[in-house]
Image (cartoon, rainbow, N blue to C red; front, side, top):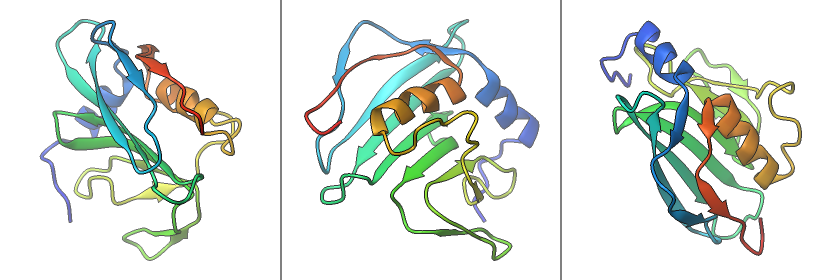
Length: 149
Protein backbone atom coordinates (compact mmCIF):
# COMPACT_ATOMS: atom_id res chain seq x y z
CA UNK A 1 0.00 0.00 0.00
CA UNK A 2 1.11 3.52 -0.79
CA UNK A 3 0.69 5.83 2.16
CA UNK A 4 1.68 9.48 1.92
CA UNK A 5 0.55 10.41 5.39
CA UNK A 6 -2.32 12.54 4.08
CA UNK A 7 -5.77 11.95 5.45
CA UNK A 8 -8.63 11.73 2.96
CA UNK A 9 -9.93 15.08 4.23
CA UNK A 10 -6.53 16.71 3.61
CA UNK A 11 -6.29 15.24 0.11
CA UNK A 12 -9.86 16.28 -0.73
CA UNK A 13 -9.09 19.80 0.52
CA UNK A 14 -5.96 19.99 -1.67
CA UNK A 15 -7.91 18.80 -4.71
CA UNK A 16 -10.64 21.37 -4.02
CA UNK A 17 -8.22 24.31 -3.66
CA UNK A 18 -8.25 26.69 -6.60
CA UNK A 19 -4.90 26.66 -8.38
CA UNK A 20 -3.18 29.07 -10.72
CA UNK A 21 -0.05 29.25 -12.84
CA UNK A 22 3.06 30.48 -11.09
CA UNK A 23 4.31 32.84 -13.77
CA UNK A 24 4.05 33.80 -17.42
CA UNK A 25 6.36 31.11 -18.77
CA UNK A 26 5.19 29.42 -21.96
CA UNK A 27 5.26 25.64 -21.96
CA UNK A 28 5.23 23.38 -25.02
CA UNK A 29 2.86 20.44 -24.97
CA UNK A 30 5.18 17.42 -24.90
CA UNK A 31 6.23 15.80 -28.14
CA UNK A 32 5.95 12.04 -28.55
CA UNK A 33 7.80 10.40 -25.69
CA UNK A 34 8.09 13.69 -23.84
CA UNK A 35 7.04 15.00 -20.46
CA UNK A 36 6.83 18.33 -18.69
CA UNK A 37 6.16 19.34 -15.11
CA UNK A 38 4.50 22.70 -14.62
CA UNK A 39 4.44 24.42 -11.21
CA UNK A 40 1.10 25.66 -9.92
CA UNK A 41 0.15 27.37 -6.69
CA UNK A 42 -3.04 27.81 -4.71
CA UNK A 43 -4.70 31.16 -5.26
CA UNK A 44 -3.66 32.23 -1.75
CA UNK A 45 -0.06 31.24 -2.70
CA UNK A 46 0.29 29.01 0.39
CA UNK A 47 0.23 25.58 -1.24
CA UNK A 48 2.41 24.53 -4.21
CA UNK A 49 1.23 21.97 -6.77
CA UNK A 50 2.64 20.30 -9.87
CA UNK A 51 0.93 19.52 -13.16
CA UNK A 52 2.60 16.65 -15.04
CA UNK A 53 1.96 15.98 -18.73
CA UNK A 54 3.39 12.82 -20.33
CA UNK A 55 3.01 11.35 -23.82
CA UNK A 56 3.84 7.96 -25.18
CA UNK A 57 6.66 7.64 -27.67
CA UNK A 58 4.69 5.42 -30.07
CA UNK A 59 0.97 5.48 -29.28
CA UNK A 60 -0.50 8.93 -30.08
CA UNK A 61 -3.57 8.19 -27.94
CA UNK A 62 -1.56 7.40 -24.79
CA UNK A 63 -1.27 10.42 -22.50
CA UNK A 64 -1.09 10.94 -18.76
CA UNK A 65 -2.18 14.10 -16.98
CA UNK A 66 -1.40 14.29 -13.28
CA UNK A 67 -1.86 16.80 -10.46
CA UNK A 68 0.45 16.45 -7.44
CA UNK A 69 0.47 18.16 -4.10
CA UNK A 70 3.19 18.23 -1.46
CA UNK A 71 5.70 17.54 -4.27
CA UNK A 72 5.14 13.78 -4.44
CA UNK A 73 1.51 13.02 -3.61
CA UNK A 74 -0.57 12.15 -6.67
CA UNK A 75 -3.95 13.72 -6.04
CA UNK A 76 -5.51 13.14 -9.47
CA UNK A 77 -4.21 11.29 -12.55
CA UNK A 78 -5.92 10.66 -15.85
CA UNK A 79 -4.57 7.85 -18.03
CA UNK A 80 -5.63 7.95 -21.67
CA UNK A 81 -4.95 5.04 -24.02
CA UNK A 82 -3.55 2.95 -21.17
CA UNK A 83 -4.11 -0.71 -20.42
CA UNK A 84 -6.99 -1.52 -18.08
CA UNK A 85 -6.24 -0.93 -14.41
CA UNK A 86 -6.87 -3.40 -11.58
CA UNK A 87 -7.97 -1.81 -8.30
CA UNK A 88 -6.87 -3.22 -4.92
CA UNK A 89 -10.24 -4.97 -4.58
CA UNK A 90 -9.68 -6.83 -7.87
CA UNK A 91 -12.10 -4.74 -9.95
CA UNK A 92 -10.78 -3.98 -13.41
CA UNK A 93 -11.33 -0.49 -14.83
CA UNK A 94 -10.97 0.05 -18.58
CA UNK A 95 -9.28 2.85 -20.41
CA UNK A 96 -9.35 5.74 -20.04
CA UNK A 97 -9.40 5.84 -16.26
CA UNK A 98 -9.10 8.46 -13.56
CA UNK A 99 -7.04 7.87 -10.40
CA UNK A 100 -8.08 9.77 -7.29
CA UNK A 101 -6.13 9.86 -4.04
CA UNK A 102 -7.50 7.45 -1.47
CA UNK A 103 -6.21 7.41 2.08
CA UNK A 104 -3.99 4.40 2.73
CA UNK A 105 -3.74 3.59 -0.98
CA UNK A 106 -2.44 6.75 -2.62
CA UNK A 107 -3.28 6.68 -6.34
CA UNK A 108 -3.91 2.91 -6.54
CA UNK A 109 -7.68 3.27 -7.14
CA UNK A 110 -9.06 4.19 -10.57
CA UNK A 111 -12.52 4.98 -11.86
CA UNK A 112 -14.13 5.72 -15.20
CA UNK A 113 -13.83 9.46 -15.89
CA UNK A 114 -17.12 11.29 -15.30
CA UNK A 115 -18.60 11.99 -18.73
CA UNK A 116 -20.14 15.25 -17.55
CA UNK A 117 -16.64 16.58 -16.71
CA UNK A 118 -14.64 15.04 -19.60
CA UNK A 119 -16.63 15.72 -22.75
CA UNK A 120 -14.32 14.40 -25.50
CA UNK A 121 -11.74 11.88 -24.31
CA UNK A 122 -10.65 11.28 -27.91
CA UNK A 123 -9.25 14.83 -28.08
CA UNK A 124 -6.13 15.08 -25.87
CA UNK A 125 -6.04 18.89 -25.97
CA UNK A 126 -9.69 19.26 -24.94
CA UNK A 127 -9.17 16.57 -22.31
CA UNK A 128 -6.23 18.50 -20.86
CA UNK A 129 -8.48 21.56 -20.51
CA UNK A 130 -11.16 19.41 -18.83
CA UNK A 131 -8.53 17.84 -16.56
CA UNK A 132 -7.28 21.23 -15.40
CA UNK A 133 -10.85 22.33 -14.74
CA UNK A 134 -11.48 19.07 -12.81
CA UNK A 135 -8.38 19.84 -10.69
CA UNK A 136 -9.63 23.41 -10.09
CA UNK A 137 -6.94 25.18 -12.10
CA UNK A 138 -8.62 28.58 -12.42
CA UNK A 139 -5.69 30.31 -14.13
CA UNK A 140 -4.19 27.80 -16.53
CA UNK A 141 -0.52 27.73 -17.48
CA UNK A 142 0.33 28.96 -20.95
CA UNK A 143 0.75 25.80 -23.01
CA UNK A 144 1.50 25.88 -26.73
CA UNK A 145 -0.05 23.08 -28.76
CA UNK A 146 2.24 20.75 -30.63
CA UNK A 147 1.97 19.26 -34.11
CA UNK A 148 0.19 16.12 -32.84
CA UNK A 149 -1.95 17.75 -30.17
